Length: 195
Image (cartoon, rainbow, N blue to C red):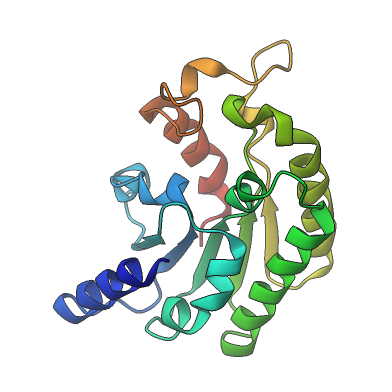
């Protein structure tokens, strides 16, 4: 399904060899659409390998292609959202297991680098799925807490208004993807975790 995206990454890497010790972003459209991500983090070298619509199953399927070409000092992952969108009956445990599989693949290749997971965001268009997403976030947070050189980055609180409701104004019309203001909120939360 995402074969072409992976070929595009290979082409990019051939044209411009990826720098060593960069921060590698891997995940779905929240990264893909954040095309100017580097401008939010001046002084950081970022390789964005988000591909839209991807699920954790896709990250696992293409793990070699997503990891082998790079020698990052840190990997930040945003994925899991689409796993539930694809299958509303999916249980949190299944998605957590998919994440742990991918995490293990990273660790086989990079035993000591920093690996961070950004919590699944609560998009208004996917409100029906929030309970599973909340449970998944909880389980992944607990897992990452026990791991070395690993952090769980919770962006959910920063996306709420004063009353604890998800801010709709930081989403595009599709109520799924973020506006530049939404990206700025993410950047402010992520920045302290960056190497």
